[in-house]
Image (cartoon, rainbow, N blue to C red):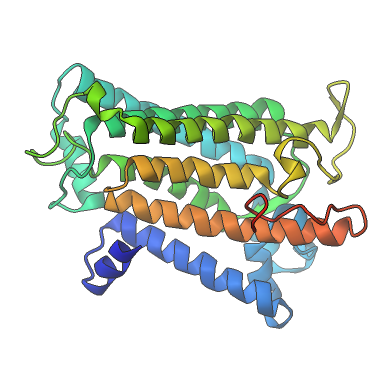
Length: 316
C-alpha cells in the first residue's frame, strides 16, 4: 500500500495503475456513501451502483433503465477474458519455453499501457504460473456462467458491463507489463523458467488459489441448485443458501475471489502494476459482500444464521 501513496505523490502512474486507482477510489467513496447516506442520494446514482437482487426497483421510471443490460451478460466477461488470457499464455510459452523474443508490436502495446521505462519485477516462473492460473480461472468461470449458473431477468448497469471487461484486460496486461522478456532486458530476472523459483512460498500461494478456485465453483453450484429440481429450473427467486462455505459467510464466491487475487498478488508481490488491480478487487468484493449480507439479513430476518459473516468467515 505504501507503494501506492509513493506513486501517487510523484504522479508516477501508468495507464493501468491510474485506471484501477480511480476504480478503487470510486468504489470506496460511492460505496461508503451508499452504506451510510443512501436515503439522501439520487436514485439514479444508487441504481447505477446496485444490481441483481439488491437493485432498486425503479427500472421502468428512470433514465438509468436505458443504460442497463441483462445480468446474464456476465458471460461476455469470460468469453473475452478466456481469449485474452489464452493469448497471453501462448506468448508466455513462446517466450519462456521456446525462447522466442516478444514481437515489437506487443512491446509497443505494453509500453503504451505500462510506460516506456517498464522494468521486470518478478521471475519468469512466477509470471508463467500466474498467467496459467488466471487462464484456468477464466475458463472455469466461462463454463460456470454457461452451464451452471441460473440467471434471472435482473439487470446490471452498462458501467458494470464495461468495468468487467476492463478488469480482465487490466489483470492480464498488468501481469505482463512488468514481466521478464516483455520489458527491456533485465539483468536481475531471466527470461526462462526455473524450478528453483517454485519455492515453498509460491507453492503455498498456488495452493490457496486452487482451494479458493474449487470452493468458488462449489458455491456457484449451491446457488444454482437452489433454483433447480431434478436438474430443471423451477424458480428464479432468491432463496437462502446453505452448505459449504455458505455456513460461514454470506458470499463465499466473493470471499474466494478475493483469495484468488490475494494469492496472485503475493506471487507477483513486486509487480507494482498488478498491486493496483488487487486493491480494486478487494475493495469491490468487500463492498458487494456487505450489500449481499445486508440484503440476506433483511430478506430472511428470522431464518438467517446470526453467526454467518459478511465477507471473511468468523471475522467480518
